Image (cartoon, rainbow, N blue to C red):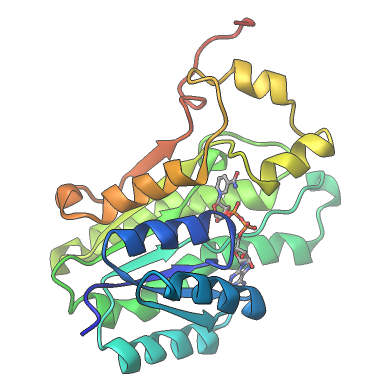
Length: 253
Ligand SMILES: NC(=O)c1ccc[n+]([C@@H]2O[C@H](COP(=O)([O-])OP(=O)(O)OC[C@H]3O[C@@H](n4cnc5c(N)ncnc54)[C@H](O)[C@@H]3O)[C@@H](O)[C@H]2O)c1
């Protein structure tokens, strides 16, 4: 008997890995899935030391790969209670120079992946007594970020798709929500600061809580949304951003 099972995509590293660690502490057996096979196997080995964990390769752009993962979960555990659609990619360029290839890749991973994994998970989720989906949105779901057209469009789409899933699958008991991390103390932010797309001082001055986010802040929000405490919450986007998307201060603090 595995107890409740959670599938986290893009769990080889970063936010996905931290979410996996948190849900394991909450009592879930974790299936970590990522396109980076070696890295996800190493992360699964790390988690296996503290509880139930299985590493699998997935490419969320590929129907067969996604179906293979849900088939393995059914065979290994016979259940799935939580799906965290975390796999994501970002590409920075002027929109006038954005290649169709890069545009489609971001849409396909960030938005198409959420649809494919949710669709494949449905037959297992309906068997759970507390099934839910959490999707990773972004400040790009609220702001026009500039130089990130595919990212902003896909992450805005994630919020719409989350509402769609919540409305359509609520009647069978499946909740769907998203979390929208702000600027996180993580490689995505560091690379943006390094290549001067982001201004560290300006970002912090526009963030009421005065710091960048930590992976554990996002993991805690996911933990709440999948818990029974959130059993009447569905279709929302929960910002985890220190207040940057509600701040109306347009002078230096
Ligand atoms: N870090 C941030 O500042 C931030 C802010 C807002 C939202 N987010 C979102 O949170 C999620 C995780 O971000 P992160 O910073 O940990 O990123 P990350 O790049 O460290 O991790 C993303 C993971 O997704 C995997 N992945 C990429 N394409 C895949 C595919 N086709 N199939 C399966 N896996 C794939 C990667 O291999 C990687 O392990 C993303 O959806 C991202 O857009 C991050």
